[in-house]
Length: 386
Image 1 (cartoon, rainbow, N blue to C red):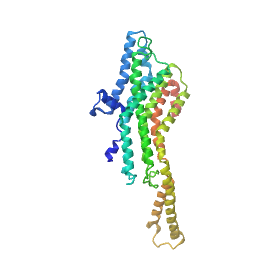
Image 2: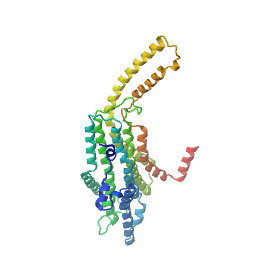
Image 3: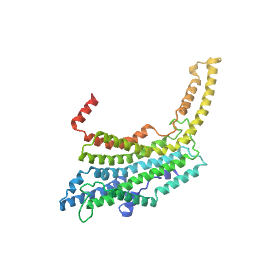
Image 4: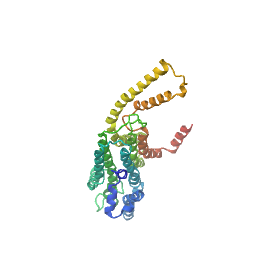
């Protein structure tokens, strides 16, 4: 596969497929912001209009209830568009990561057919119409399961009239808004599964790893950087949870422990979900580390012995030591060998995890700060400054 093909490996999506089938998207109309606006308009604007109509012609407080529902605004106006825009930003990074395996020479000539086969199967699965159909069916199955559990419904969603248990806005939310959001989330999880599958297949190859590589991961640290590509999904999940907390805040006082538990639980879920795929490289990295400490260690030890015999125990040359390359060469060798001993067997760093964690908990932190009285928040800021 060429580099251009590799860099376009992750690029489809069930929402774009659905847009094309509805006739509202053409190849020239797949700009992320346009798709995000389409999804927000489809999921939120009809709810606004239907809630207003119901409030106008009935005695219910549907419109006021809809405007006060922070959860639906967070899901339809922020989370769903963020998943669309984030896909356009993040998926090319995954594709470039795949291309880097070839560009960096990590795939041997003998393993190239297996690598190409893994990429080809990933591309077929990513663009599979069956996957989009399963995502659609699963999204509606989840909606049915949630509604069957008889959750407490807001006033704009419920109705006791001829339409059954739901209002017009409630039906639109159940049949369109919520399934679209679930399809977007399932699309991210589907690509996460494909990403994990691809990394597992690559980890089984005879990778050309260099234990002394300056990235201290034998040349695989770039795989860990790809974890940052899932930050938009973490942000969207944080927005969904934050919207739920904001709704609880309007009904009752929410203790700070609720924010802590929600942020902590979501953070653990996101880090485990999106950070786990890279652990498949523990086996080849461990093998490279063991090989490196023996080979580089033996070489450094032999050179060190020669250095000691020459400069500490033997007859020293007449040339001043600072003018000879022995000392700088030994220092360089020991620095290279030190990279081997400091090598990590998990190609991910704390900065990448933080890049994923901060957008996830940020929406919850914003809601938590908004729940604090101004005098308490003011005293907290003063305490931080003084």
